[in-house]
Image 1: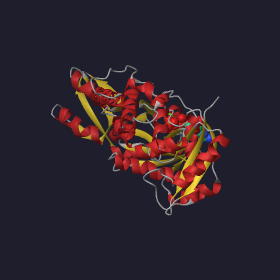
Image 2: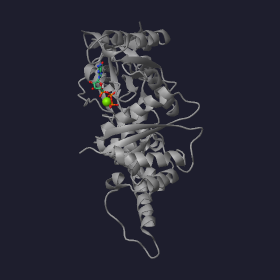
Image 3: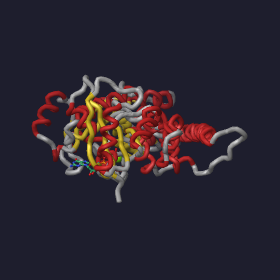
Length: 420
Ligand SMILES: Nc1nc2c(ncn2[C@@H]2O[C@H](COP(=O)(O)OP(=O)(O)OP(=O)(O)O)[C@@H](O)[C@H]2O)c(=O)[nH]1
Ligand SMILES: [Mg+2]
């Protein structure tokens, strides 16, 4: 039987009740992704957060009386709790207490498939766990690798556990550095194509767009954080143009800081992009808040200066009034439905226009024996025409200005190149 949980949110004087309710609705999506059943919501008005118990003592007592009636196994808070708050709440309520970060960490742990994602999640989970070791942490235990070390003289079990975790964290950091170096080497080969990165809120439809435009076949699911790894594929825009499109892990409000830190290299894949496509689910009434969150995370990752285009997806099932309002505020955005394949031509045309502004065309004549120069041109340019005369080849080419910056140094010294 599914675990039953109670969700708790706090309304501070600076907040609207509807906003906190929306956040709880999102938390309930997160806990449903874990397979739990939401028994009820509990909203508390407070002037400020209590350092000891997050909500006041009276409210904790009220909650305690509610729990048997609701038959819940866990209480989950929408905000992050300090180790002290967790401990105090657990002692009084006598059920497992969780916060938003721990829920997100467990989803990531469940969905991690590749070695890289598993390493990143384990690192973030252990860093989260280290200061909270005194509480029950059975849901994280299996990620530590199982083996328990024996305690030395005078060492308590907790001290042993901390030592074990610290050394595991050091090991994981080393592993990640190695994985980062490998990733860096893979990136080097991808220089001559224009790179477009899909980023955005989780469940917005990034992977659906990826699959529609390329042959990637990324798993798509109606659950949060279905994708944790980066996939890169060529998207053939038209006869002469291809771009490299990447799909990666999604964002969410209050992504745990240590998760952002350990996924930094995956998230920064978008940092290599010439253009970022911010994908937002317009069928979600909180879509503008989602866009703000995406912008905040891009700023945090230092990626906000990369040119970007906002794509509102899922126009097949949205509220017409909301669409009108969003369109007024975001006239330059693109509105599509990846699932129903609506307005995809708009997206394609937009990228074509961007590409045209980024490229230049030239023609060049090379002796056939100059194999090196011919290979360079073929590898890094789009060839739009070729004719052979005697022992020479005449090539009409298009390449990106960025590629031209270095390609010209190789070519100009050899033959005459004419920019059209
Ligand atoms: N109605 C509708 N549903 C869509 C559309 N695009 C995607 N979806 C659905 O939205 C859900 C999430 O889609 P994904 O492509 O997995 O979303 P994602 O952004 O990759 O999500 P994560 O990888 O989990 O961050 C799936 O159930 C899709 O079928 C659309 O245009 N309209
Ligand atoms: Mg996805």
